[in-house]
Image (cartoon, rainbow, N blue to C red; front, top):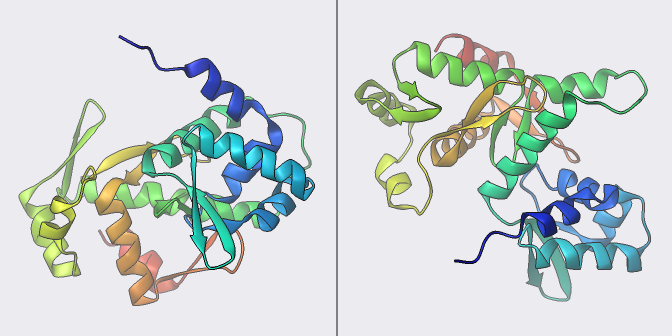
Length: 222
């Protein structure tokens, strides 16, 4: 039976420019090659070569819209891999300037592909576990009956989530907190509802989220 080509995947991720492009797409949005070239601080031809490697390895997908081409993270599994690698790399940091306020915003709350990450993301999972909405055993999450009722009250369409070809709830290792936050279809749905309520909002650039006092209360009162 053919074995997964881990060496090739590792080689693709080992390049700093390609790693920077992948990190730039971790907020779940699609970016153009020009935008990704700027994120990686490389020329347009070099960016094109890197993007070909990333799409060829199945890490990114390319979307054509009119005359434009957009790139995004291929799926949630790739996003979870990237977030996990960030968590591991955070334990072996290279020399860098002292972190500033923008970094603190990322640690507080950010998008991890399509779900909430950072300090508040970890608190969200802790709250759902403590409230008896979720259970965790050997790293596997399960939605409990109380959690099903909570989802209905919160406006989440559980039947639709279960029909989708995606794990309902799973853990994702948080790169800044070094603990797990909630991902999967349920994690994405909760972030969608928080955005709809205006409790969190995206910034024009980057992964950091602006969280309102109501959003903080929502998580703390779970």
